[in-house]
Length: 194
Image 1 (tube, one colour):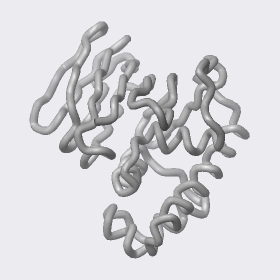
Image 2 (cartoon, rainbow, N blue to C red; image 1 turned 180 degrees about the vertical axis):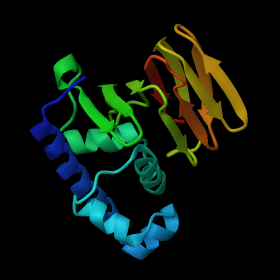
Image 3 (cartoon, one colour; image 1 turned 45 degrees about the vertical axis):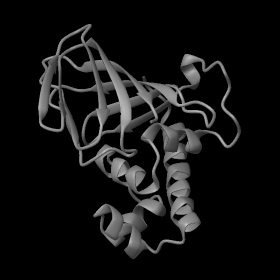
C-alpha cells in the first residue's frame, strides 16, 4: 500500500488547500468552523496552511461540518476532473494517519452521479479510531473483514468481527473501530449515501 513520500506530500498540500477553499466557499471564519467542529482555531489554521496533517478523527469532524464523506473529500483532493470508470490499483488514492495506525485506500472513489463507493481499510494492531458522529447522517455502510480481528462499535452496540464476517449498519451516531491484534485488521467498506 505504499506510495512515494513526494506524492504523499503533494496530497497533503492539496488537502490543506481544499479544506481552506471549503471554509471560504461557506464564508465561515476560523472561529465559526472551530465552533462547528470543536477543533481549535490555531489547529484549523495550521491545517489549512499545510503545517500539520489531520488525524482520521479530525478529518471526520471537518467532513461532518462540510456534509461530505471522507472519501468524497479525498476524491475532490485527488482529481479536479471527473474520475475514470476504471481505477487501476496503482492509481487508487491512499491516505495514512500514522498517529492512529490507519491506512485508507479509495478503491472505487466517489462520483457526483453515484451514491456508493468502496474503501479498503487497514488498522495496525492496537489501533483504535473513534468518530464522534457520521460525516453524513444516515450513511449506510457494509464492512467486510478480510483479515485479522476487528471490534466495531456503532452507537452502544459492540460487534466482534473475524475474517469473512460482514457488518451492515447505518450511521446516526458515534462509531469506533479497534484492532485487538495480534495481526492487522484489513477490511473492505462499502459506503452508500442516504
